[in-house]
Length: 96
Image 1 (cartoon, rainbow, N blue to C red):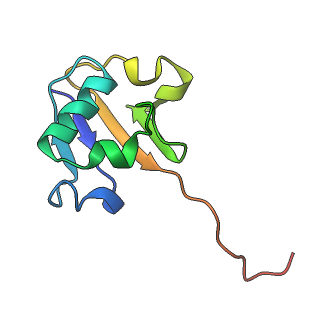
Image 2 (image 1 turned 60 degrees about the horizontal axis):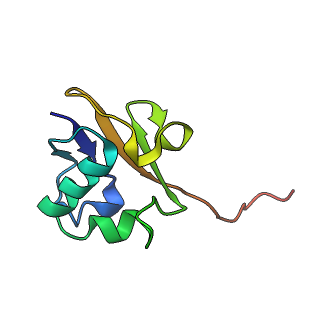
């Protein structure tokens, strides 16, 4: 059964669980099941068109789904789906 790795910033939605097992054939179905088990994920991960939000990266094992079939990327029994929120910004304390 594929598992979805939940980043720390979203674990309040999964009751603190770092992984959630899902039964799905592709990433889209996996995220739908994740939201069915733990409501609130869809709104945090997907935009109004049902596509990943700009600052949310999703990987199947080591492969970014945006470089392949997107949410229609297939998943197998032993796959790990990772949700990686993009990190940006900050201020350097060192002069340039």
